[in-house]
Length: 245
Image (tube, rainbow, N blue to C red; front, top):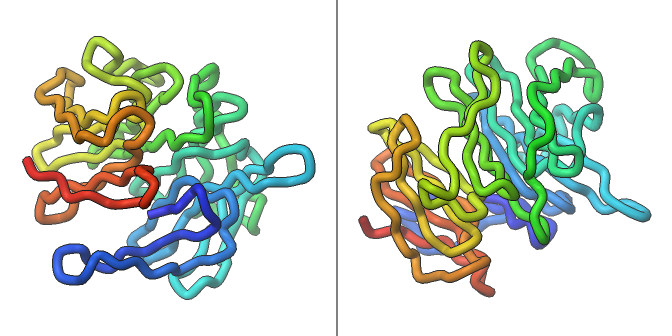
């Protein structure tokens, strides 16, 4: 979890067996808004760090112990979403310039010298206020991106490029978070109306759940290995809720 309103990344140990308490594992991530973790335990944080007169985008790669093992400024512009593929390449949603880029952190290059590819442009991640635009790579390598400002989820593949997966007609309203169920269905959180939408693997709507949190309160969603669904809310208390389905 990333507490992007504050300055810390927060690790929740195991909500199934422990009290609902959090432990900060980083305390110097000003502007962090999204995170991803690779199989070795490295954490990739997307940060829009405040600077004099604006912000500077950076991907910072850290160990759980806090060591900065890598970083990348080039090709990053107010990143709001990140996702790793099976080859160690990181997809980044750049809010300021509306681009989707891919950074190859496995290319052996020095920090801030990794290969950056721009995969798509003219995307509407920006909304009124700083919001996540989370990304997801499925087992087949298909990338899903929440185009928050466009009220839709898109897919990107090498073969087909960028395509619309679902939009307002499928119940999306400022989608910010996305997660995948074991059956291949997707869960999308709507910041615009506080609902959670379940889509099949072709983008058809299956269920729309009103979380009761209301407009402007719902952020991320995650599915645990046992299928339990958690949603993160900005309800004043910064709570994580277990969704009863």
